[in-house]
Image (cartoon, rainbow, N blue to C red; front, side, top):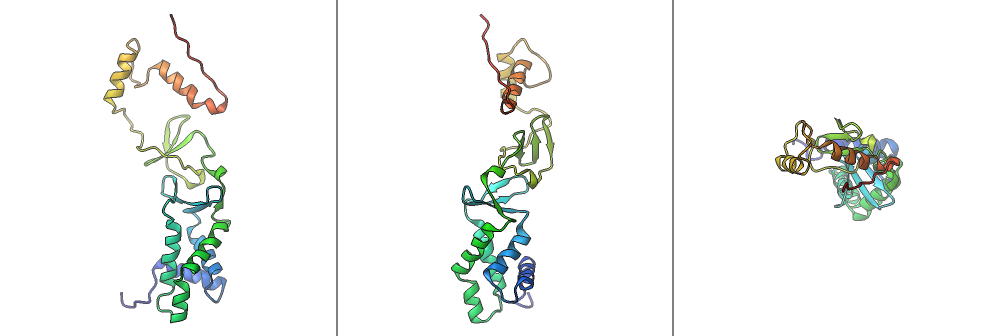
Length: 206
């Protein structure tokens, strides 16, 4: 890098916005600029007192306080080439903590626990969001506020020989291409719609 004072692109944008908001770099100015550039990927849950970050497929709780680290890195980049007084001020823990505190209450970030997973028939997967009502896999959207995720993406074809063998042995009278026999499928369907008011009872034939 020809000039050691050149800021990274993100930090430069934050600095530009911060200076537009206030001539002097302040905690409030940096917080507002930081919010503007991270409003699509960060949320602060005031019910749980923690940050959430959009991963590209679901909202994941930030258990390591990465948001604070992002602000610290931004402050360090903003202070590159500054004089000693500004350098010391922007790299203080208290400055970063102040910016983070401003960010927590910023309308771009502030939410409560009731915003997560508002649609009971949507669930996140590594490959997208599944609509449970029809089993459709679609692209993930942060607006859905999905925070629950499965370990794997649904496959187009069932690759589960142990499960298929178990189903075949448990329901020898039912055959077909589906890996879930009709009786079990109806049971799972009832279970799926239970939140909508449905109920199911099982009776054993003698």
